[in-house]
Length: 356
Image (cartoon, rainbow, N blue to C red; front, side, top):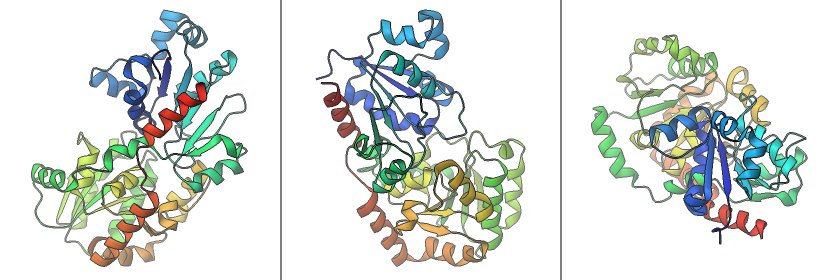
C-alpha cells in the first residue's frame, strides 16, 4: 500500500514529535524520512534513530524545495507547535510544499495549536474531537478538511500496565504510602511557578509528597526559584525534572496538576486524574491567547478537575486527591468521552487513501 511512496514527517518540539512518531511504523520506516529540529532532533540523536535537519538539507540538496523534489516526496505529515515557536521547520516546509504541489497533512498535537498561514497548503487536519473541529471551522478551515481521528501519541497508553509501572517507579523514587501530587510545569517562566506557589499556599493539607517537573524551557527553574518549595512543610518535595520517562512519573502520581499541559491528558489516559489551574491572570489568559479558548474540553465535560481562582484551591484539591467516589467518576468520564482507538492506524490509512 505504501511501498512506492515517500513520506516526510516534520517536528521540532517534543509534543508535536510524539504525535507523529507512531506514524513512522504505520507508514513503514523505509518509506519515512524524519526532518527534525530542536528537542525532536535531540531525541532522535539520543536514541540513534535516522533523521535529517535543515543544515543537512541545505548542505546536501541546497534547500528544502530541491530536497523535496529530488527525493520524490509524495506527502508531508507535520504537527502543530504552539505560537511560541517562530520560523519553525513545519512552516518552512509547508511553503516549499505549496510551491511543488505536495500534499500536506497536519496532526494537531493539542486542541487549538494549529494556526494555518495563508500561504501554507493544507490537505487534511486531524484533530481529537468535535470541540477542535468547530474551533478550526471558526478559523476558516473548510469543514471537509478536518477529520476527528484522535491523537497518535496516546495510542500506546490504552493498554498500559499502570499499576506495575506505578509500583516500580514509586520504589525507585523511594516513596512511601503518602499521597503523591505531580506538578507538570510549562515553558512560561513566572506564570508556571506562580501558579504552583498559589496552589501550595492555599491547599491546607500538607501530608502529601510533591513531585515537581519543570519544563525544559522554564527560565524560572534555571534561576533556582523552585528551591523555595521546600519551605511549605510538605511530607516530601522531590525534583523530577530530569526523570527520563514522564509516563512513569504519571503512573507514580495520584493526581497530576498543571496549568494546561498535555501531561494532564496523558495522565488521564493512564487512569490518573488531572487538575488544571487556570487563574484569570495566568493560565486562563495564556490559554486564550495561544489556543483560542479559555475552558479546556476535559474540564467542560468534568473529565478533569478545574481550579479557576484561589478560593477554590483547598476544596477542589481535597476532592481531587482524597475523594474516591469523585475520582472514579472523573476517570470514567474521561475514559468514555475522550479516549479513542488506534489513531495512528486511522490517520495513516486515510493519508494513503488521499494519495490514490
